[in-house]
Image 1 (tube, one colour):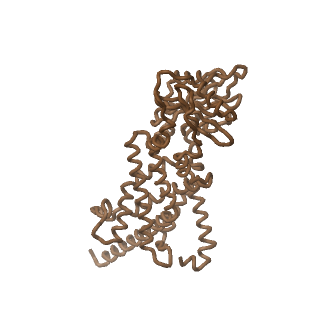
Image 2 (cartoon, rainbow, N blue to C red):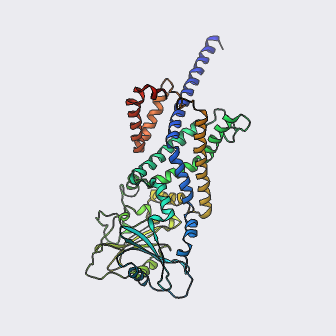
Length: 457
């Protein structure tokens, strides 16, 4: 090879190296800011999610005296149990009834009283009231609310959704930064380097565990997003209604034209939340007794643990719903309140491909699909997320200069523009990310660039 060709080759290699380094710095910059801004929220999601995985075991311990009754051979009818609640709380509205699913388990009657909702536990063998719980004060309800919306309503829901979306950016950019530049490199990639000093070890204790749990973290984020208020609602409409709507086989007769959705009248599985609610039309008859509704549920082979939502309006329907541990047992059934006729029967087998995928993702996310092993794997991922979030914050704190943020400098060239365009596309897919990008740009343009101390920091 001539000297001229060697020089040309060296020049090309230098340019490629410069481009590679510029791209690395840009992605590192996005990873840095996303991690810095959303660390607190990801830590909250990991801790509350890890706790919520064990909801069955925790509630079993907390409410043992309410859940359990002495087994007996005889029992009283559901209507007698509900009547006992009405006599105890005459000014309450009865909203739901959940039958006992075994001889040692109490039944549950949901009521509203003075703008609050309560669960009344009833002994199904004699109709005696075992106790009462304020639904808003139940520990796992509070943890679920904190996990889903930071106990801040719609604003909290949007923050959680934003953090979840940016978590995807963190995972993708983190994977790029982790990707080994040398193919035969193992230490620092698959296992931490314990003999290279504290700084290297701290970096490895962040990056290596992040690699091992990245797939699980991405799974939890993607299966949690369908519950979000903005992106989740839009996705739900697309997944369950777009193009084909609900299959005709679930309706007895024509599909209703009602604007009332099932989530407005009952707590139902995700796939049935936007299902239109049919009307009870035979209002010349008296309402079917709750005992008969329970008998119909047995005839329809609905899975144990179902809840009956009791109609509150003359045209309302009985809604039977079951949140079973396994997605395959989900069901939502609407019954005419005057005749008991099945108006709609929507189950896992009726879901489209995406509906089944989301239903399965939700039960895996909640740790119920495969029992304790599912919970254990979810817990390991949550602990891992908390660990990499904390290690990332410590890594930044140890490395950052005293008088500024310590963010990677903006490199020259096209790398910044290319990655920014990719992030903008991501912002179009996830609208809250796009909105946050606009807000950051406005903040940067009108404040940071125009105030020298902020710019230096």
